[in-house]
Each structure stands twice: as C-alpha cells, then as structure tokens.
Image (cartoon, rainbow, N blue to C red; front, side, top):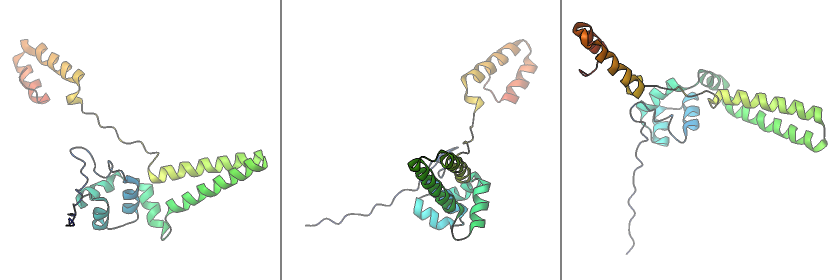
Length: 171
C-alpha cells in the first residue's frame, strides 16, 4: 500500500526578542530587494515564511538609498544595472590582462572597484549592522552598581534614592 505523504507547513521565520526575523533570515538580500521594489507584504510573507508584521518593522532597517534607487529605477532595478556594470568591468579587466595592456587594466580595476563599492552601498552589504549593548547585564556595570549601593550604606536616604533610580534590588 502506498503511503500518502502529509504536507508539512513551514513555520514562519522568527527573530525573537530584540532580533529582526528578516535581518536574521538567510534570504535577507532578496527580502530587502522585494521590500525596496514595493512588493506586497503578503507575497513576501508567503515566499519567505515571515510574518507581515515582521516585514513591516524590517522596512526601517533598509538602506534609504536602496529604497530610493529601487523606486526610481523602474522595470530594471538599479541593483541589476549595477551588477551588469560589474560584469562588464570584469570583462574589460580580463581583456586587458590577456592583451597585456596595463593602462586599460588599471582603468578597468578602478571602474570595477567603484562599481562594487556602489553596489555594496546600495544593497547594504557595506553598511555595518548596528551594535546593541545592554549595560545592565554587563558584569562590570553590575559590580559598579553594587559597590555604589554599598558605599551609600552610611547615607540611607541617598542610598534609597540611588536604588530607586537604578532600579536595583536592595543590595
């Protein structure tokens, strides 16, 4: 008897507390391009298994230049045009190397470098991710806070005021 395989639904990609599901998704680049190109949240949600709410919040993480350029580019997006320029610059570099033309090769290298920089900026690959530091959980801060509260033991009113401001358990 043949078994009937049960279709399993793929669970939505979740980011979790303080993490963006889209930023952590393996297809982040495609998600960014889809959002920048104005694709519907519903279609992106179904395609990448991310909630519409997460996609909506992720818009704030997109490079403003990527959104502006994608919107202005029309049918053929700027990313595709830049990728084409990179391919063409590589062909010129290959041609220069084969012919031994160092002047043409150096020019091709400069153009390729500039094209790659622009492409990296537009796609957000060269934009560093923001770093979030939670001081309240750092051991050095906890130790310093504990020492402050203990040092104020001789001054009960000041100690209570500091404890209230720092939101500390009575140490």
